[in-house]
Amino acid sequence: MLFIRSISMNYPIRNVIFERIKRLGGVTTDLDLINSLQKDNISILEDDFNKVLLDLEIFGLIRVGWITKERKRIELVN
Image (spheres, rainbow, N blue to C red):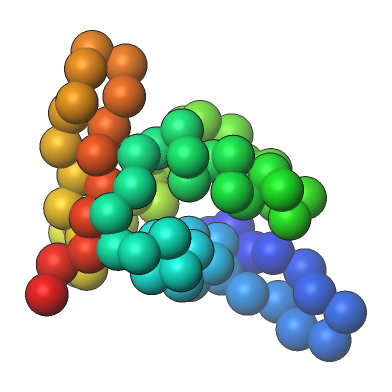
């Protein structure tokens, strides 16, 4: 499991990404989400990013669909 280090705590990257999707209004693209994470100096490999999205989708928290061959649409499930 991947973690993001803070001054006082470790946060699972899964939680960080889920909270970021919520902060972005519940609907975003994979590129916008990665750019948002990078603004806060959070870098993640593409394979790890896709695994986290898959985990969140399996948990029923988000839905991921394809916009184009290379871009994904990510939305919260109500």
